[in-house]
Each structure stands twice: as structure tokens, then as C-alpha cells.
Length: 107
Image (cartoon, rainbow, N blue to C red):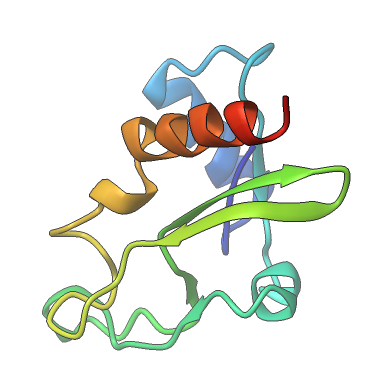
């Protein structure tokens, strides 16, 4: 699942632009930011080059099993609050490592 503070039409267009297989990955919009706020994932930094993009979703990835967060990675640093320059911790390779560790620990 991919979601961010945006409307459904934008998320659908983004999914198509990325060539994401709908059977594997679903994109959801959070137009009011309610889910983002509830998760504590609001990025309240003014945005790239100070463009005033407040209330966005932090760049993060989570592994959730039966409603329990098993792993959470947030790509943010003091010099890169949006995680744009250093997204590695929330990218697929990092999350696959978490899945491998979880698989071993839950055997």
C-alpha cells in the first residue's frame, strides 16, 4: 500500500505513471491528512526550496502484521527532514532486510 496526503485522482495518476501493478500495490489518497495525523507522520517542514508544502506525509515504510507494527523506518534527518536526499532506510532493500529478520525470529 502507498498513501500520502493527496486526493484519489492524483494517487491513481501517480500509480499509472509509476507502472505499479494494481494487483500487487494499491495507492490511496489521504486528502484531509486524517490518517497521516493519526499515525503521527505529518511532515510539517516547509518543503523543498521553501515552497510551503506543509502537511505532507513523512517518507516512511512499515511492516504491519495482524494490526501490529513489526518494523518502522522513517527517512528523515535534521538536514533532510523530507528524506528526499537519504531515503534508503524506508526503501525496499531495507524493508526486505526487516522481513528476513522477522521471518527468522517468528519460526
